[in-house]
Image 1 (cartoon, rainbow, N blue to C red):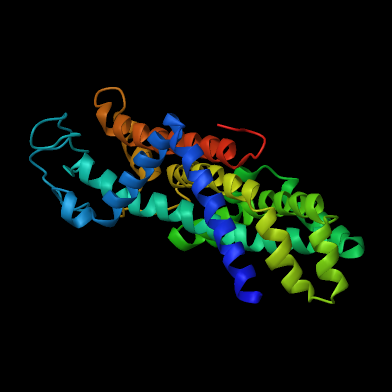
Image 2: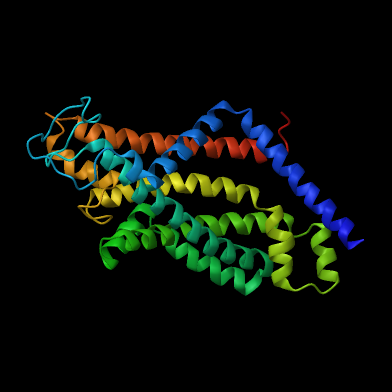
Length: 292
């Protein structure tokens, strides 16, 4: 009987996954966004094989050159190839977005699940602490934390992680409250199942859909915020390549050599737009009320 139930649960999960993927595949914008993001990630991972030059490699005889066959996106004020720096910069920008959202989601889901499941004083304490964090806009909170900890890759991740915890906590809390009164939760409680098992085996799996969408959108926000921090000198520091830092380094040359800031800026726009399109597609694919 147990083996049969396990097979049924497994087939049900596979059926839901296939149904979601089928709906997502019908959304052309979402598929386009997914292709762009996967391409960016692969280019960042294999940057040493793809980039024609190193991100620190300088050619002082070819500074501030426009796009050409030798340098597709031109060179900056130090003669560094902008195309190569954008590829290497994807390692920092994308990893900051993904890692910060990963840890903020784990912490936020844990806090929100505990708040929604236990309620009472636990709910009040956790929500009031989150209210303190949300009293300040996320970008200002990230700037304050980065200024306190100092610039750098790790500190940027910490700042973005803390600033995004309230969003995941409230989302998971609302999802837990929606499913808490269901029959399968009451059945699990009636057989004295442990709270940890009820939350992570029965509550969260049935409330995970909006969290997935929130995570996708949060990665886009984290990439944009990390670029903002680097632009004002609180993120990744030179000579490391990062999209926001490239914008900051090239802003003094924007009038005469616009390609220095145009290509990093377009890369940020493309990454954020692709993630938002993917998030919208996931939201529609995971919505059971929509039948494609």
